[in-house]
Image (cartoon, rainbow, N blue to C red; front, side):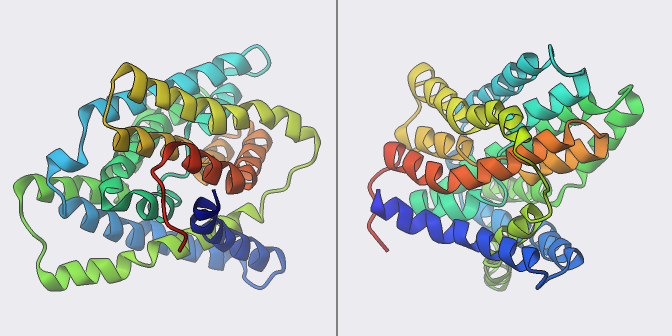
Length: 310
């Protein structure tokens, strides 16, 4: 357990540094947004493109993993949304469901999964992003939007088509499938740029969390979604991938660890844009991130192979 804490807590500490800097006014919101945009538009796509291109497609893509993980993701989304519907309208209920199903797999996945599983974790990270961003974000956006129609679906489709992270995953997978190696200078460039993805993403995440304003009354409202995100979701993924589909241990470990990520700030942005359960979703994002600082190492200790203390 000490080994997993030694790996995970410094990563969550970077989130704390970003939160402290924003809370104390050492950086302005525009600076946090700039750091986050750099990570999302440049560093993270470079990291994923390089990792995906370096592996044959058969090694990085497992259809059973993708379908099983996506099925568990949609199952949690539907379960939490249906549980919230008696108390909320469709839009807010969908926002809470999305908060329970959308983990911070893009920002937290690489710095947490790669040290534990090595570069073989790149494929599961990519497939979890495809599941939780390409599918859940799109579905949640459509269900949250008042009077959702073709205009809403068109806007969501445009966002997905031009999403740099999804484009980098697709491009890397195509290069890996074709067996086309990256030229040395390009590989070094992507490695250098991608090396900034983890620190900048985590710092920006902390700065974003510092903006969230919640009170104690939201704790009860958010607790159900937090439990679903950090407990039910990893458990369901373990059951589907390991017990039902019988995948190899590395795929099960990767799936459970990715499902144990705290709620993504994208869930809050999506709820805010549609004015749907914004306060509740912000509480889920904040509380799940705080709890995950200890819950994720505990999950890793239970599911992942032994690691050496750095």
